[in-house]
Length: 309
Image 1 (cartoon, helix red, strand yellow):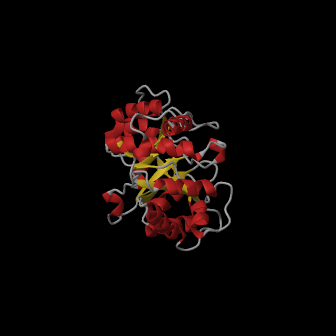
Image 2 (image 1 turned 90 degrees about the horizontal axis):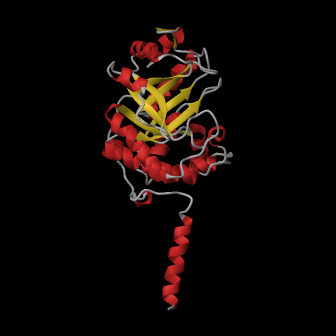
Image 3 (image 1 turned 135 degrees about the vertical axis):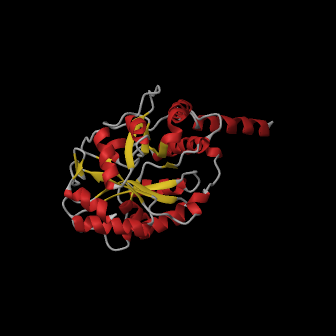
């Protein structure tokens, strides 16, 4: 009798722990550690591209990417209300040889938001998008910078990890390469060196631990270089450690360098190559970086980027 009471109590407790998240029928926790053959293969040349931060149109952007010989573009789509709408970068870029690295968000960016709680609905919406575009997506990226407070406030990493498990599972089913929304090189350096952390470095450690058992193709690293640049070999040291720790290859769909400084640009391109990133998409324009283009023409900085790659 006591044993029956104990079992019933345990079942009740386990059910209560799952109230905050509505999981799919094949729960993401059932995933086992997975390292794809691609992650263990010899690294190829870095695939360079662009994230336009200055409102460049799709038509102009296609021409710019061709002139840069960097045919990879970062764009995004939100799926909470997705009903099959056209993603113009994919539709117009794909036929022109442009390859899309797509940030797939749950909510629309622009304000502090939350990671999805209803993962059954999340999976349904993700499948809608991939059913239409899976064969035209180069890499699918889950959200953007989950540890950045201005995007996510204090939302717990447990919700992002739960989302990412579903995301990776579905992407693998559709044959789409996938990555997390990015952690920052400097925070990874704090974790790997065991130094005094900042507010977000414990979250980065939590994510890195989770990535070891999530079937990602890549771990996504962002970095922003200031006037002093980075020490020699920093990107390689962080990339090597992250690959070894997580079992996944490394990419970046966003990196920043100070404006009008071709010396730092050249150094960072060389460090990216040395670190064997799979993809590296340079931020163009906006509030910090020099623009690589104006209209459909390259700026002098864009010519530097083209020639330094």
